[in-house]
Amino acid sequence: GENVEQHPSTLSVQEGDSAVIKCTYSDSASNYFPWYKQELGKRPQLIIDIRSNVGEKKDQRIAVTLNKTAKHFSLHITETQPEDSAVYFCADCFGNEKLTFGTGTRLTIIP
Amino acid sequence: DSGVTQTPKHLITATGQRVTLRCSPRSGDLSVYWYQQSLDQGLQFLIQYYNGEERAKGNILERFSAQQFPDLHSELNLSSLELGDSALYFCASSPLAAPYNEQFFGPGTRLTVL
Image (cartoon, rainbow over all chains, first blue to last red; front, side, top):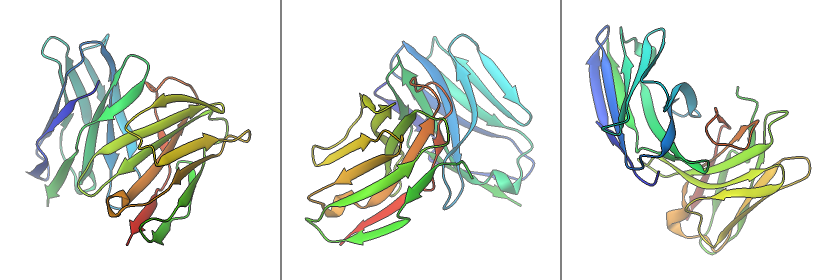
């Protein structure tokens, strides 16, 4: 859709703790919600995505939940490690047109 | 390495000038997307080409244009450059037309307009 809000903009967590990043979208017809990770000086890479016909998806320490009624989706990282430090971007896809990205969350894992 | 290549890596130019950024998609990918990433900003979608044809347009300025060639590489042309055009420009590719599939990003071209 046209507007994706992402919070928080920065997040610091102790190594081993969990991190949660939340995004809110505006178009109820949005049907695809990817999360990209961008390490410092590197390219964005897809880490997990979810489609509108499911409520949750997990991949090892990473999970994404989708609440279509409230129009928000969240990234959950458990047992955080130093290599999880990066900027994380959510996005949504409205119809068949394009991805709209959030403004990013800078996650810092404190050893 | 995603398999997507972009040249040049860095570009420094002056206001009012014109530059061309080049992108080669992964082998077999028919879609190419262009994004602009300014300091402390997210990824702004500019334009998508699929198999040589423009498929979707984002917030691309009229001073910017793009094309995709028969060998599927793409070029982004930026003209009458302004200071505010300084940014990291990424291209991404995917096999299909629809954007709801994984996009593979290139390493980016850092443009500095002085």
